[in-house]
Every structure is written in C-alpha cells, then in structure tokens.
Image 1 (tube, helix red, strand yellow):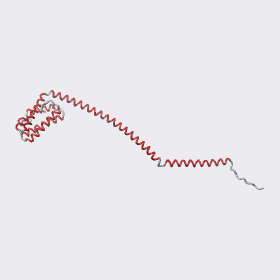
Image 2 (image 1 turned 90 degrees about the vertical axis):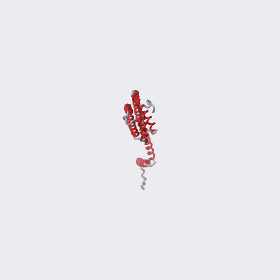
Image 3 (image 1 turned 180 degrees about the horizontal axis):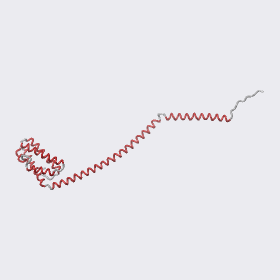
Image 4 (image 1 turned 135 degrees about the vertical axis):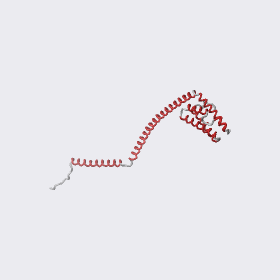
Length: 221
C-alpha cells in the first residue's frame, strides 16, 4: 500500500506567533516612519520664520516695556529737578526782594547822599552843554582841575555808600574812571576825547542809578 504524505499544516499557536511577529514589524516600521517624518518637519525651514516672528514679537514687546519704564523714570526725575528749580527760583526771588527792601531803606535814610548825586546830574548836564558847544573852558570851570574837587569827592562817597553788590561797585568805579578821563581830556583841550569820555561818564552813572534803584529818586535822568 502506498504511503500518502499530507502537507504539514501549522498549528494555531504557530500562526499566532507569526502573525504577532508580522504585526510587530509593521508597527515598528510605522513608528520609524512617523519619527523620521517628525524629524524632517522639525528641521524644515518653514518652522524657522514662525519662531523668528515669535522671537521678534517678544523682542519688540520687551523693548517697548523697557522704554516705557525708562520714560517713566526720566519723567519722574525731570519732575523732581523741575521742583528743585522752582524752589531755587523762589528762594532767589525772596532774596532779591529782601535786598530791594534793604536798599530802599538805605536810600530813604541817605538824603544827604541823594543830594550829592543830584548835584552830579546837574554838573554833568552843564558839562555836556559846554562840550556840545565846543566850549571846553566852560566845561573845565564846572569839572575842576582834578578829581579832588569837592563835588566829585562827595559824589564818590555817595557812590561808595550806596553800592552794595559787585555790579554796583563796578559801575561806580567805571563812572569815577570815566570822569577822571573827562577832566584830563578837557584840560588838554581834546574835544573828541572829551566827547567820548563824557558819554562814558554819563552812561556809567545812569546804569549805576538803574541797578541801585535810585533812578526814580533823582531828577534829570
């Protein structure tokens, strides 16, 4: 009798094992594909602009906030400095007002000195008229030969007493110096130099009376 060979049929357990192996391989391939795709997408240049725009937006926002903080700080400091300036200005105004009051008190109690200064205006007026008429001898008769003339010594004493600030003292010295030059020019019969010296003397005296507050107390200015 002939022997019949039947094909070998895998058992159910063997089929199960093979199926699991195949499925596992498919799963591994699928996971590998997903991982590779993710890596490619992450490295894609399309993601770079998105990140750049986001970074740029954050940078602008940060800069804006810092600028606002800086502006607030600057405004606060500016307000403090402005307040300090206002206080300094107020103190200066108070000091100037106090000086003016004190000066008016000195002027009010200096009737004798005011009279000396009024005489200066009268003398300068006469000298000016004489020089304008080219009459230097007449000018010399009013001025005198030196600064030791009585009316000049009295005027100098008044200027010294009523000059308190450095500016006032400077103008008082300028008047005395110009007056000395005027006397010298008149004596030398130099009409042009006499005119220049007269203008300088009159200007210095007028400026002195203005800054000392005496301009309203004297006539002829």
